[in-house]
Length: 203
Ligand SMILES: Cc1cc2nc3c(=O)[nH]c(=O)nc-3n(C[C@H](O)[C@H](O)[C@H](O)COP(=O)(O)O)c2cc1C
Image 1: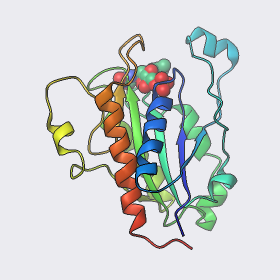
Image 2: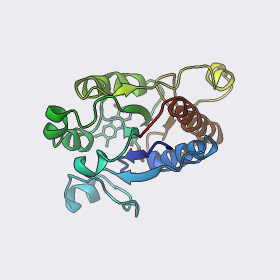
Image 3: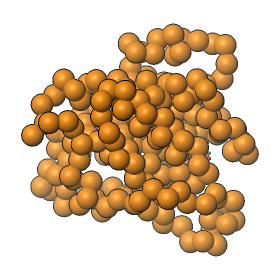
């Protein structure tokens, strides 16, 4: 049976959402139809407006119980001070039941990340997320280099993403949307994540 894959992102300004959609296209190339969800907002409209947040996308939000129905996850995370945002943490802080019952244990997870700047913390955000994945017994699937060595070794242009997962640089004012090569890397991650899943048997 084909694995059930959920792409779950948080996005305040829309960049990580676009990467999520590229990941979905990549998974499709591996023969997997993934569902996209967003993590619930925790900030008030007043605070969001002061932060110049964009409109929320129409993707449904997901709770921990519904997420248990999936076999594998790609999480999209915009960096906050080199770490994941409070919204992502708040989601995981609702997963005590899954932690105690092993609801996510042995399932597969990958990450993709947005930062404003180069060196703004894509890798440190992935590292910070490892503790959450480990405590839930999730099997982390990195992007690695095998399927994207040419892109990842290229020094011709600024580009988000690393062997920890695809990524995008938004620019300080958020005006830079994901570039062609960042979208390509995200699609490669989706496809290679799918290829890893296709080696596993799901009931
Ligand atoms: C409170 C706050 C902290 C941030 N911290 C960082 C940071 O440490 N490094 C960085 O490069 N960008 C940082 N950013 C920029 C975000 O990572 C960037 O806006 C985000 O990746 C955009 O993704 P989105 O459009 O999907 O929301 C920060 C943004 C906010 C609002």
